[in-house]
Image (tube, rainbow, N blue to C red; front, top):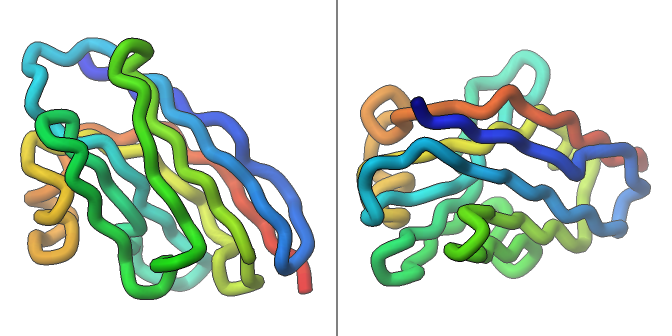
Length: 128
C-alpha cells in the first residue's frame, strides 16, 4: 500500500518561503512520479508540480514557474517543494501525489487519470 506523508505547511507572509516535504513508501515500481496538487477554498484541485523518478523530469504549472522548485531524494523516497515569493493566491491545502505516469503528464492528463495515490494534505496560508 502506497503511503504519502506531507509536512512543512504553515502560515507565512506574502513574499516569504516555505518548504513542503513528502515521505513516500510502499511502491512496487521504480518508475513513477511524485508531485503536488493544491486546492484553494471554492476552487478545483490544481496540479502544481511533479518530478519523475526515472529521469528527474519535472513539470510546473504556469502559476508557480520561477517561484517553486521541486526536488527529490530517491534514497529517502522523499520529494520536496521549495516555495519562494509566496502570494496570497498560493493559499491552499497542498496534497502530495504519486502517479504511474511521468511528470510532464500532469499538465495534460485529468486529475483522476494522473493520480494514483493522495497524501492527507497540509495547509499553506499566505497572508497579505
